[in-house]
Length: 479
Ligand code: AMP
Image (cartoon, rainbow, N blue to C red; front, side, top):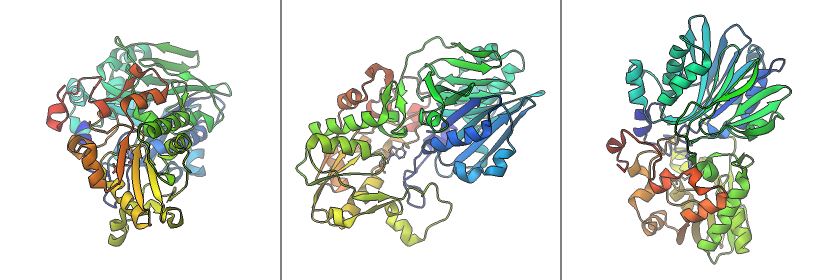
């Protein structure tokens, strides 16, 4: 996505009042598997990674005589059917699930992006966001507005590949990219995985029936029965082909800064990352939250689904009953049908509905993973109160979200982030809760059980690991 689109984004609740997972927390996948049904494997890999993006889905496949891409707006299961998959024959494939801001969801932004270089063709899937899009566009002599950052990358790689081989092309071009990029790339006979030198977004390697698999998260391997081998290291490029698997390391400065929000919110709880179970880490966040911000209440209720493991941890540590008080419609996905005005006004109710019997007359702790703009949470609290809760105490299993992300999480401009404008007390007043407690930074980092120096915490601390060229114009810090 173009940085200008990110910076100009306005929505957390979209125009139909639904909570949107905004940003480019996309899912990428790839499989090199002579003799395997690679399109079908990619379909299922994307299906498991659907939580990382619901706006568009695409698969590129090659049988050795050119790359074919099929992509469209919608969920994986809406874009592909038996017939479509049967037409995608080959021995290697890559796939992509995309999510972006409301309004920028055009077909042109769907991935994999594709480029022909003479007789050859390549395709690329990207999770993340470049922070030097404009200088890259200048270097390539193209208008920034005409290409997404993923297309710019495909263009840059393609041009170089026209002159030389993969190793040299990637070693020359990749160091020109700044920001977050976990990529799967392919041509007729190579599958390539790339993780940027800070390792912002995840990428894992697996094995299946003599083939190799790349996926954003381990849940993408599990679904197809692939064995997890290891994570691609920050700054590592892995090239898979007829001759086997090899790695190159084209980046000079490598230091891991994986997005801490992968642990808080993005990743699926059944995935593992940096050797840790995401579910177990989220439970520990809840346990720690209970110690930092106890509450004298009758029940602990999660905001489904992201708040569930932390609520379980909170309830267990505080020895308070854990109760389901809200039900989420799991099938909402991305709606293409406009609700009526009355339904819009109900906003969050399209997605979450209270179980009145569990809330009536109770003092409640609600546990959620984060508050970003505060608009969804405010509606939610009012709904829980209307359902009859006597007291509502909100506990959040991450610290206040204060700074815009430039690495693939489009959470809007800084002034849209409620914690950058208000103190915790002011937020509590705005949300109309009886008390509000956020997990501390130390609490969060300890709960991950990962070396804290390996995380990017910019959205919570303002400590950005790269230069952000256009920061001042966005209202972001100039530090
Ligand atoms: P709000 O009250 O509008 O700030 O929305 C808070 C809700 O957004 C929480 O339930 C979070 O789980 C969810 N959330 C957190 N991060 C994201 C994200 N990057 N995209 C979409 N939703 C998110």
